[in-house]
Length: 497
Image (cartoon, rainbow, N blue to C red):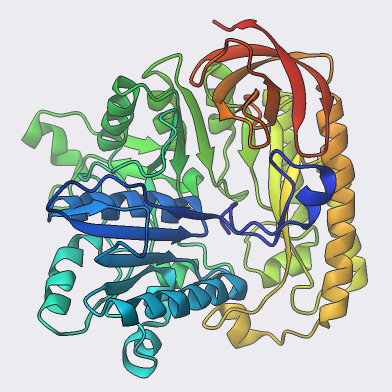
């Protein structure tokens, strides 16, 4: 479950009440950069960071075929909604948006509307044949085909391609950075997922797992550094299972060196992470998401070795009870998860931030099993979490095998207890930082006042401080003097090395 898809989150520049109760409805839109004579493309992206990264791929593909982006749906010739299927609410949001967009289309009949991403794969027939509310449907592995699909619509036909690939990584496409602050960028290192958690639709909408060639990842990041970017986040549904070799399938590994003159390379996530860290010591490196069953000590030792690898790990647990974890097909136990947390604390120390995803009220969960989630939270002391009650998704293993038998009022009660406990932990974890000075990468103005700047610490905490003479993109040492459960507040001391 990706970390930006949740009903409740505790993170960001908010007070405690806002942080606890505000849904995480992340939506990004394209900027206005269409040149004269180009057709105008408007992309609205929903859900996770992978979707946002995919939209940058789509913009690059369409730019090669005469489309520039616009920030206005009303001005667009072509509208793409890049969608998320992880929760019912996410799908409802997109459907409401399609109603509005079809209102625009009635006033501008030549406007073309397409649905991309996870909903496209899952609901293709409803969109095209039954409801007839879009012109084009393309799944996550069909973005190279978009110009051809658009051409079919131009010729008066409906167009669809939702085929999933075992090979596609878009490694050779240079993304167009949408809504970029010029400081931080997402870099996809792999696609798909092989885990098949019983509650999750991702394996069915994004296909099987495949890793992008390491050299293409390194080159993309070198290009970003040359453009002035100061931070990259490596993206994958499960980054810890990244694996890539330079030996093609047509050559036996034992014959590769003799036939090509190259050495065999077998890269895993630990070696890739080290390659990226070595690109530039002033480049901050983050990654998401880690899976507890695959996170190795090797990765943690690489994190400890390099100061520029941020000391923050998103390690979704989902439940603190081993029986429920087995029903979820998470393939680890409570004890295994605790061992991974202990390894983080042993190798990286108490200051390394850990965040999580949690589901309340999964099928057959008892009150005692719910209490085990709370006791696990007390053991880990998460810095923040993404928390939601279970919502059955059509097509998942859970929907096929288990009865969604926990009453909604019980789900909500258990969720509120998780939220309340996480709020206490988040506040306590932030309070221990008061009085310390932290190296902060300035990301821009505070959301609440242009007199303040905001950035993040290595452990992914948002910190707000007076602007003074500091600027976006600088590393600044900031002394923390106050906090909420969601945000640190402080004063800049000096530029950091």
